[in-house]
Figure 1: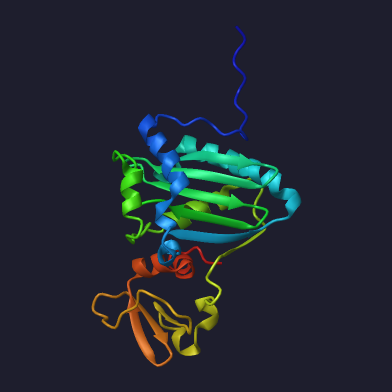
Figure 2 (figure 1 turned 180 degrees about the vertical axis):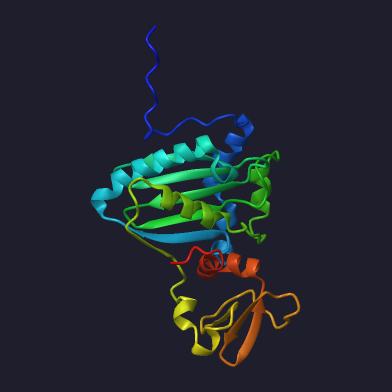
Length: 245
């Protein structure tokens, strides 16, 4: 018998050794995504970038994303399984499922090249290794948690590894919030860990005993934990994890 033809690198590869009930629960939770139901937590549980590409390059970039995801899945890049949920060359849209290696937490990357958006999102508090995890995550949809900046790391790693590179990109921050680099005053430039900004920022408090970040808002000095501030703000997440350009 002739050998079976090799799979195309631009075609989604089947999942490896992943339990069937995990894949079943992943398909349900990928559709529901309860972690982003609450508007106040949407930004906390998501990391967004703006990718600027021409419309003629959308199909090429979709192929590049699929090829890169297949390679990441073989290498178990960043200690997780990478699966293609859907890929549409004409629409320029790709959905990537990320399942962590041990407990099977599910995160999703949604790329829409026509709109120039790329979003990495946590889908739920509990891992899919637990029976009925999608149902339990529905009940815990308003429970805040941190992704420990893994979403931003995965999306940045994917963008940097594409064969057809993204020409220009930026972190998608809220409309009212500008880059803290542009708001930094001369008095704060020489003081590591201190930022001066006029933008409203959550997760701040007055006690400085356990804080590792200090921010100056007008005449007030507030403090925050680096991990909490990174989870609450995509802009600060990019700055504090070294992914800011």
